[in-house]
Image 1 (cartoon, rainbow, N blue to C red):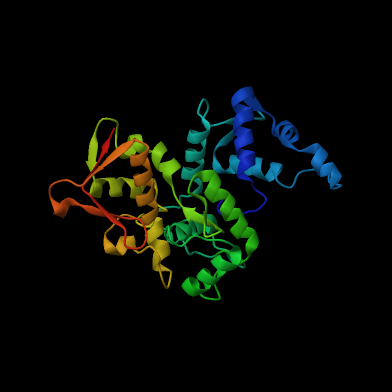
Image 2 (image 1 turned 120 degrees about the vertical axis):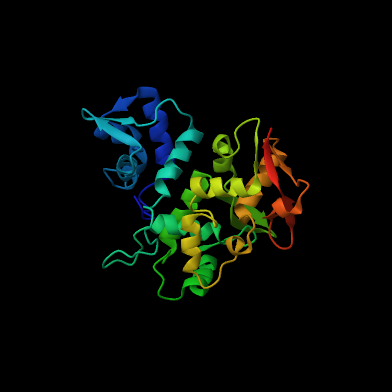
Amino acid sequence: MTELNEMVLPVVWSVVHRVLEADREMPEDELVACLTPTGLIQRENQSSSRHVGPSVRALEALGLLENVDGKLRLVMRGVDEAAFRFEAARHLLSIPNGTDPWEERPESKRLEYDLQVAVAWFCLQGIESGLSTFPAAEDRLMKQLGADRKLLRDSAPYNTLERWIEWLGLGGFTTIAGVRLLVPDPTPLVRFALDDLVPSGTYVSMPEFLDRAAVIFPWLPHGALGEAVAAGLREVPDASAEEKRAPECLSLALVRLEIEGEIALEPGDDPRTRVLLSLGGSERLAVARITRR
């Protein structure tokens, strides 16, 4: 699954996870029937849901469900919702090493890695460049990619991207001056990955932390996918990779995690070891290392 398919709903994935955690395994047709909102679709004179079947099959195609003797079951069992979403993000947002993310599908108006590029593009917009509506996003896309772009050509894939951003924990909505804006904020995913980024009771230097984060989250602006997508844009609101500072959305996540008491951001004694966290505008915070509390 690489495209922004409006038929696949992440909320269905959560329900599938909950049902199969409880019942362990179930035939596909029984699972789809179990999750289909029969009363709702009957009022619309339909016999099947447009979303449940495609969502279940997408989970299977992604490798998060497996078919054993005609019954579907979770590949990762006994994990909570946060772990399930993290694993979904890991599968969804990766592309083969060395692959051009801007590769186009033959005879198609979409990219081969539609979803992955869209997520990386969203993170490159920075935390001050909140997106309000598709027309606002389209105006920015026109400036950054031109009229012949293959990415987010209409409102359907854009609305689908919004759903994935929220469900995966890549961003959220905030209201500024009465306008509802979608802002990149990967705090839930960074929080879940802390054991790999900064093991409990230890510390890592900021350069080492950034290297680890780029591997775990290649779609961040300083990750391989983020850099490849940035190279295809005419302008990049978050140019942190070029300026050798932490990406804005990652900086926001780190500040939030310090406020929560998960980590400590330490300036250190040597200014040469410090990396700037960017919080939008002129706000900067120099950090030499991160300590896990």
